[in-house]
Amino acid sequence: MAYWPSEEWMSLFKDAINASPEYKAAAANWEGTMAYVFQAEPDKGLLEDVCGFFDLWHGECRDARQIPVEDAATAAFVITAPYSIWKQVMKRQLDPIKAIMQGKMRMKGDLPTVVRNTKAAQVLNEVAGTVPSEYLDELPSEVIEELAAQGLPVRVPPGRS
View 1 (cartoon, helix red, strand yellow):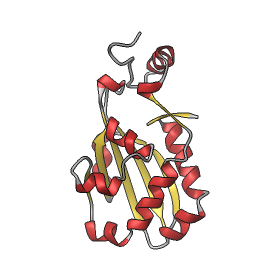
View 2 (spheres, rainbow, N blue to C red):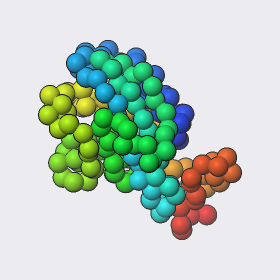
View 3 (cartoon, rainbow, N blue to C red):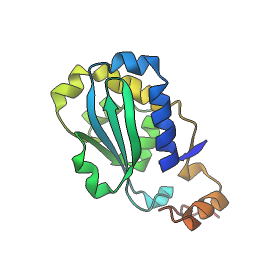
View 4 (cartoon, rainbow, N blue to C red):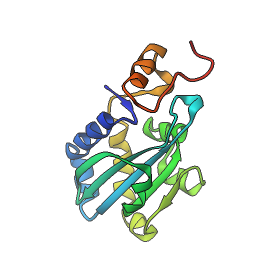
């Protein structure tokens, strides 16, 4: 199990994408890079924005890694939202397409391409929800302190001991 949104989580997400026959079928015509920007929410434990970069190519993920947030614009598609909104999406409590339409998430990229590939986006979200994940605001304080000691941009949320 990996804490989300860590480099380890992104690697597990890549593996899950590549193991999904449903995604391979739904995204057969999809090609392009995607950046997920997880915006900082210090009250949830995330001190800095974190960006995941995913190279998606015809039902396969060729690369998944963290990149500097300022490099997110190099991706064909960029989806940005606060940590808590992303968490709802990852836990499948909030549909990402609906969140974009409601303004809870922002997307940059070619909208007609996304509309033509809505099923691929839905399946990608389903796959993300299968990745064993631990969320910062649910971790014990001592685990968050260990992650912070490793140099990760996290802290124990205020009001927790």
